[in-house]
Image (cartoon, rainbow, N blue to C red; front, side):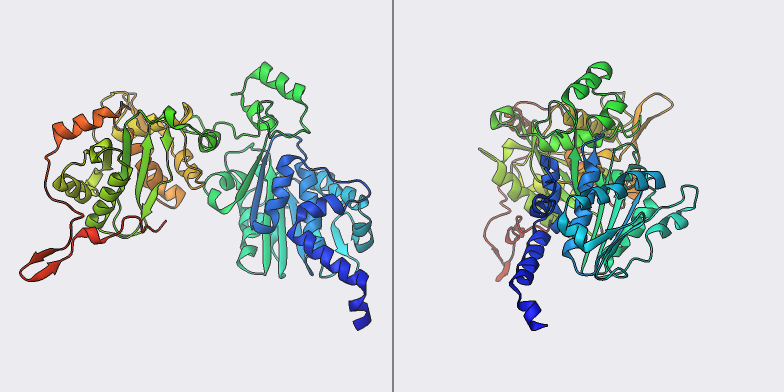
Length: 510
């Protein structure tokens, strides 16, 4: 036995498998020695992300080669993990048996190693050395079944190394994904991989791109002729013809050519693609440095909600600061320090806008006014909007924020912003006024408060204006005070009284 273990060929093979486990791109290029796998740029990204991602989602246009990549990832997991179990499903039994499962056989034929070690059948792939404990299995679910029976499709798979694959997940019921994700709670290495066309504005793929975005590594695959990262497998002239014939805003073009979700609904302020585009924008300073600086603050004290500082200057924003479980004096001190740090000349450079609906922000507002020199405007979102098209200020500010995103605003690359900005809906009052969905309803659907979006929306209380106008607002509306919140400790009755200046506003829990 020792002689076998010390055999140079065995040692070399083991080292190669360990390398392939850590580097699936090398596996894809080397394992298929009879007909090499030549990945597109997006496939390279998927292969490189695979070892490090528990959840991997491919949002794809039509025909870019996603099924081929799923097959390669399944083979990598089977070949490089000990005693793994893989379960694969798809939107229909025919799609699974006609597409993904034959794709496994196709790539096995291209590899001497895989052909020798594994046996493919119409429902299973097994390792010849341990067929009962080392396999991939095809699973289907009845479309007419209730959610519990659908969820049972992937139940019963347990091992140290488990992988679930959902092909064409755009239309798969969420119950099936829920069962797949349950495996992540145990095992040594567990993965859920899904891929599909963005045909539905509900279900696993849509949730991965919106509500659950922070949990997933999402890769968008497009045939867009104007995108340098487009899939080369999509014929350029075909894509151009579809866009010329129907337009970029056509839902069919969005799904099949661009790899984008169609409009979420007729009453959605923003779509996923709008927000993702804003997160990719890069602006030079001359595009915004002449505009007034604004700090939007959404105040929460204790509980699940977050206090958020969101800085915006014209079309530019920066990663917001998030604070939890602090009182209004502490929050005000951090706001004052943040304003001081951001201001170019003096604190009057920055206009601070605070949501004071229900007077949650009143303590922060009072402190900043008391200290003097800080231009601050409270917002009562239930108050009537200046523009009578809107039912209240909340509807007006959120609408202005959505217009800003679509018109070229640049957002920080924060996946958690996607659901906050895309899930809110609107309707119209009997008088025809634009009315935003109630915040309590939105919070119930999201499972958390949209604090980031609310803080950003605060900065749209007034139209953007030149930077010099902030100083005018400060002189007109606020009393100057000699009180310095950052002064040294004061002596009172022989005892030292500590100021809120002792708090460091940049020691923030994100």
